[in-house]
Amino acid sequence: VVDIGGGTTEVAVISLGGIVVAQSIRIGGDEFDEAIIAHIKKEYNVLIGERTAEEIKFEIGSAYPLAEELDVEVRGRDL
Image (cartoon, rainbow, N blue to C red; front, side):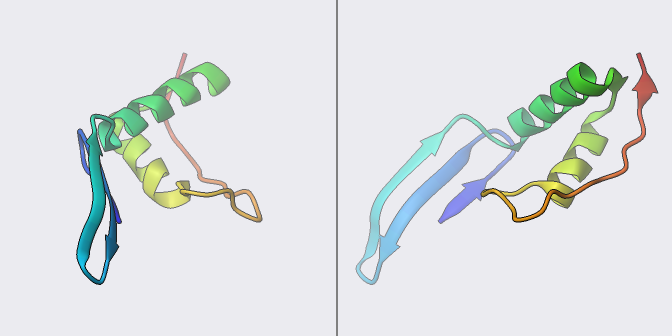
């Protein structure tokens, strides 16, 4: 089970008897949003806000590589 919150991510392995192992790390959705903002700025020279970064995360984010690449249209300020 993986729960990605705003500031932390909790991971647990469970079985019929309950939780086998669990851990919490201080990397959460906010850090993902910041990484998306930095990537768009570096690769496309466009500044986007936190809301747009979160929309990108929900639209095309994936925990594993996809068979086909997804696209999303983004608006921001040209730098």
